[in-house]
Structure formats: C-alpha cells, structure tokens
Image (cartoon, one colour):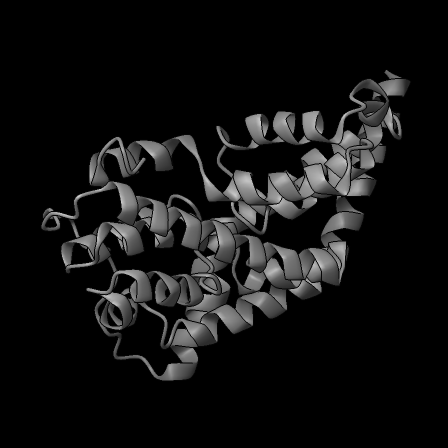
Length: 272
C-alpha cells in the first residue's frame, strides 16, 4: 500500500510539473487561436481555395496549418469544403495537414521541446499535406463534389469581436482539448515514473524500428496536436529517439481511425 501511494504521489508530481511548464504556452496559444478565429473560419477558407487544384493545395495547407483543429474536428470542415466545390486534392491536403499542428500546439511544442521541434512540426505538416494533395490529384478523377453536411457554427455572431476572441480562445478550444491535455500529462507522468530511463532505447536499438513502432501506435489512437506534446515527452523520457517522438507528433494527431472512416465515406477508398 505504501509503495502504491509513493508511485501515485510521484505520478501526480510529474503531471503537475508538466502542466505547470506547458500552461503559459497553452494560454498564449489559446489567445492567438481566438484572434485567428475572427478571420480563419470555414467560410473564409472556402473562399481562398474553393476551386483550386495545385495552387489550391498550397493555399489550403498554408491556411490550415495555424488552425487549432483536431483530426475529428477537421472532418466537418473538410466536408463543407468539398460540398462548396473544393477539389479532392485540396480537400485531402486540408484533412492531412490541419490536424497535425496549430498555433496552440506550436507554442506548447516550443515551450516544452524547444525551437527545433516547433519548427519541424509545421514543416512536416506542410510537406505531408502537399504530398497527400498532389498524390490524390494524380490518382483521382476529380468528379463533382458530393453533397455533404456543412460544418456547424458558421453563422456570424452578433457579439463584439473581443467577446468572440475570448469565447473561441478560452471556452471553445479549452473545452475540446482541455481534458486531452490533462490526460496527456498523466500518461507522460506514468511513463516517466514507471519506465526506467533509456529502457525502450535498450530494447529497440534501431531508430527506424522505433519510428515504425511509434507510428503503429500513434495512427489508431485519437489525440489532438497539443495533447500529443506531453505524450512525446514521455516517449523521450522512456529512451526513444527524438526522431521517433517526431513521428508520433506527426502520425498521432494527423490520422486517427475515425478520420480514416470519415475520409473513406467522403472521398472514397483510393483517396483514403
């Protein structure tokens, strides 16, 4: 019993430390996300790349990377884009790149993992999003977009701009990712407490094998881009390479089982 209480105390102490370290970056990210929500809503994104092909792919990836949207939250936006005339390529690029990162997750990544990871995350989202969009354009006959249910909440609110910033930044976004952030901190703390330093690195010697295992774990689970950061910290604490942690930051938020099923229904098996 005493040993259990010691482990629990250690886990809570590690979790509190992780939350304390990430909190100023999370709050700053929430504020920036709230400001961006005044302009970067689904309607504006549709107007910018609605009917483009190759040019639309680059535009939508550039617009999607800062959006704080998770892999499930991006589905109604992608469906709305497709309904309003977006090609398969731009839609696929948006669905691939947007969930991987956002202003909030970039800020948290910078605060907890340093500037290199903070730079590589949006770069990975850019490369993978463009590659996915171009691949879909090259392999799909882009027929007319099917009817799809538009994203909810696109109506203009009558509230003043500052109230919308605060509501979107500090109510809507924390409601969607707050629980995942706490859960991510707890899992990170569990790994730090229960897994000895360099344990996984000693068991799996190949960096490529580490990346494959991390990707196989990250794709099926649902995790938002911000909450993935403490998970990645736990992987580093367990002895995995920075490359494997980076693979998790890409694959975990970028793809989930629910996303794959939704894309299959929205755009077909080949695009999926």
